[in-house]
Image 1 (cartoon, rainbow, N blue to C red):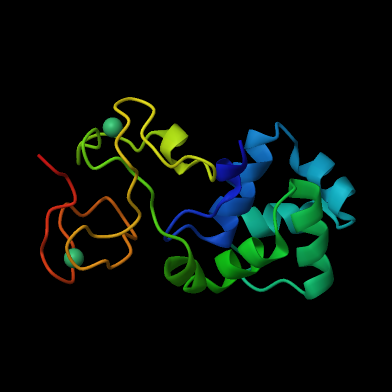
Image 2 (image 1 turned 180 degrees about the vertical axis):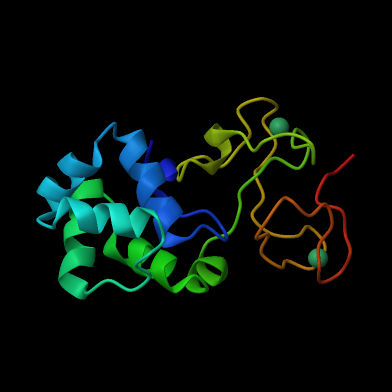
Length: 148
Ligand SMILES: [Zn+2]
Ligand SMILES: [Zn+2]
């Protein structure tokens, strides 16, 4: 599923690369080979020892992981993801204590597969994009994300 390839809000490049690699069931060695970089570089990136990589490495990694370079670039900068990519969720089925359903974040998903409600990516009251569902209420207007 393509949505797994989207960096999550607040996800670091280290966590992002590691998550995608594991999802593809690749070893660090295999990833390094596919990206044309040294296996130790992959290890360093995944441990967060490297926060800036050169463009060639980034392109190689993105190609090997099958993700857009922009995503990786955003993840490496940390802040751009938050402004570009929000969280998609069903305001009825989502519960603050539950994990997000992966099916909701599918790029093609518009409606909840459980109840048919239109999925939301922003606050129902003020339209502010939802960046994290670790919060129950919109930080801008205080409107609860979960609808009754
Ligand atoms: Zn639902
Ligand atoms: Zn709001």
